[in-house]
Image (cartoon, rainbow over all chains, first blue to last red; front, side):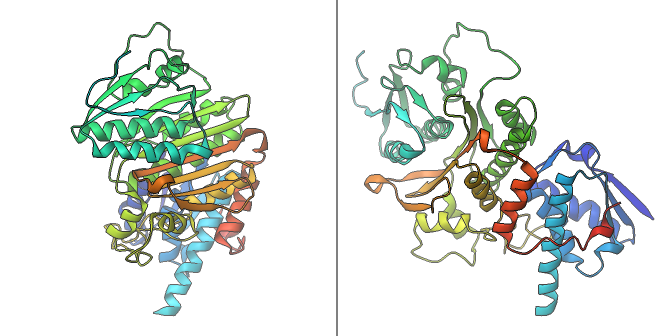
Length: 104
Length: 319
């Protein structure tokens, strides 16, 4: 099953609030991935983001699923700028997640 | 004009820029030990946004502490109209008649706004639009920076904050100022029992720590959503964006200050005269013409701050 989140509808053109992103990750995204859904984040109309937002949502998500993120999420309609935020958050989240896994 | 009797009078300086912001804040901090304070605006000619919001934050803090505040010579000072338009007086509870029309749409400043739990990201966007109404890279840089500063204030201060922004065409400086009279950066490390906190840590050390990459006072806290939202890179990214535009950044908290001028190494010390400002102030200043490709600036900042190479190994994640 696939579930699509339209980020502009949810958070506006500028994704800024890290607290809101963190709550959304926990309440909406993780709840759906735990049921086996593939999550698609659609960034149509999103023009900017903060590092706080991208780390709280995508960095933390990647940290929790460093080995199987590809089975759980996809990103759609990303401008090069938004793609930069996502690549950075995800790659560093995966790095943190793998480090944590090695230390356990 | 006669000054009210029995008051501690603070003669506000003529100009406040990044270089003497600490002096103003040290003097504002002295107000807390008095039961009545008179703010004398006689000399005031120009203040950067961080100075304006610091005065607003301090006066409102004094109101909360039942310290009686009065204001003199404000209507006669050189900056009166500007300070009125930027809402300094109204945000301090001083309602003055206005003999001008407030323009909507693009301006070269954004009046003082409160930062509290209800503050929305649109505020950061409006700050960006003020600096760059065309919606170019300068708008995005300011939007990003204001977003990070506002969130920091909301997450860490435990107090109401104030923000304002301004573009000074003559110097080509785009500035954001955020101030609060909350617990301060050291207080945030202490109260959150951060692993970075140690007894005897100075405010200047706490500021320097907060600006270091991957340091957040809340990163290790048990969190209701499983993980802290903070990775501790926001301020570090901001610092590097400022460096890239040859701008200025000043952070003052408690008895300490930290400052970066362009590409020079940052400096940090105690406030002048062993001063103390009861809260945190952040002043961010970009040289607008130095703002080029926003995406390239972010990549450069991430390379410096996060260190690790950004591999495109996740290409399959993108549809």
